[in-house]
Image 1: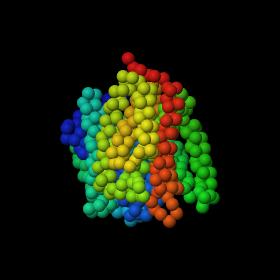
Image 2: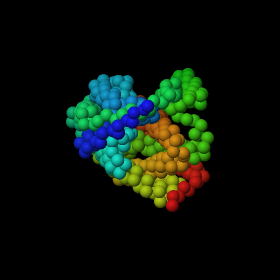
Image 3: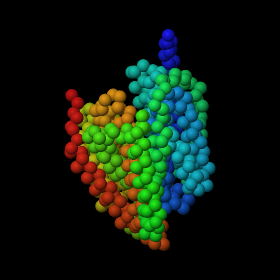
Image 4: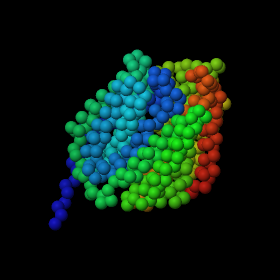
Length: 465
């Protein structure tokens, strides 16, 4: 005879508030690199390609951690896994704060990537402890606080790095993460673990996907120096092909694959993945190139703006990204995903192409960056929402995991391509990329984004009544 399990204890506003403070802290810690990337490149003597790697390594870890965190949260309880993930994030923040060089800083960012899996876990905890109506409000509040934290980090990172040091811009939000985690552990009741998954965790799939993503980044980082080290690039390409082949074989045979590749055979899935990759690639190239252009002071181009000024200039883009989510969701429900993705892709392509032609005034950069952020949010929201409602309920997790991994790969490739173009466009004996490198980067990103419309036009309208 089985005993009925007692429902989870109801949580109060204080526990939800602790989750919100944690979201603000992690959002701030996640966003400090973007406005200070040029400063970090100078202090740590990084090439543009290495700077691009630093800007996306946290997301790569997040793509690997998120599906694993969800499965562990279901098995052992959301709070238990969340607290442990935040311990990893805190360790990563401290490593980043104390990092004397690039390899150590990369290690810190890898550990910080656990925060990407922490936010969905907080949603699981809220849903278990609150009724449906109240949980939606709490999830919206926590999501909004994460965005607010990102904006706070973007604005404060420059002044902290310039007035104190780059070490403190990591240390201060890390201290906040540690404090909010301790508060959450005290105020949030434990949620009961779920049923064990007999199929277990797809560790081989996780390992081979990790190898694939890491090797892909190394290939892109080595591409600008292919002329001087062709053998190294050739070996990396072979290793990458081996990892891709191994990962594909492992996932096709796994009883419970981390990423179910059979889903890609469905037209709605592969089209969504292609579009997600291309849109995120264009976004990432723009997001990487803009701070570099603001920082550089070349002959007739660039602005020579410091980290504090860059943070202020990037803020409208962060606001646009925060607004894009609800706008994209409402647009998807009213007009269907194809209409929203079309509008977003056109907007992004126009913004990127315009930046390739006009980038001599600060307002050019502000408007272009804001349009790119808005367009990316519209597209990704519509694609994720469309996928979540077009597949069977039991396949929602698998489908959204595919989109998540594709999104991160798009961001990673875009950032590395942008860095490779600047590295290749830097004259010998100089550390300042030529203006043509920026023009070429924006132009390539704009053309690739425009080509995505060939896939968009084949999508179902998907208009909901």
